Length: 207
Image (tube, rainbow, N blue to C red; front, side, top):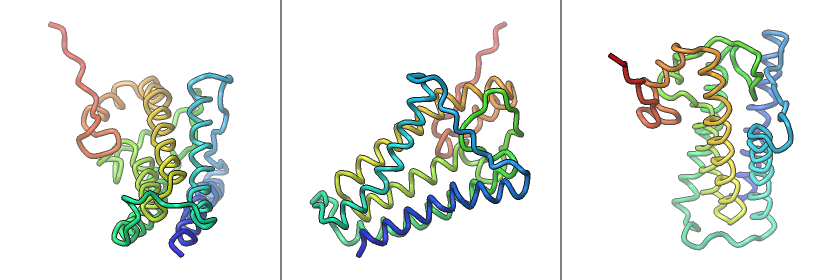
């Protein structure tokens, strides 16, 4: 039962975060917000997107494996953990959509290096620079707690790796290059994924 519920929650999350959000963006601006170019084969952006796609597929495979009878990890196979996972997953799905909407017209999936959008630093973005990814990780952790088998654990691990690569190697250099001191100052004040954690160190002033 929990496995099927986890699969339904996951598919709902995908439909809202990628389908409905893209449609809403297109209706509001005439642009879906999708920037899906992977870049040259073997590049950092290519690997980041490949890992992200793998994480999405594993996210489906985890609950599917549970439905098919895959054994859970014994240490995590506890009802309180599954209930906590359900609460976290539902909260994560809602938070993912809310933080996406908070970006307004600047919302994108992927990066166009030649595009300049408004830097959003208010609302949830005043607490963390990447609250959408934070919410997605929370959702994945919740689903893994609901269906604690090795495939689900792998899905969360690969998702975190892909997000770290995307943020650190692609998005942060792009934002620094595009917004300069505005982004640098923001990164000094606000943590990367959680409040106060992962803030950029101020550049020393030479005298």
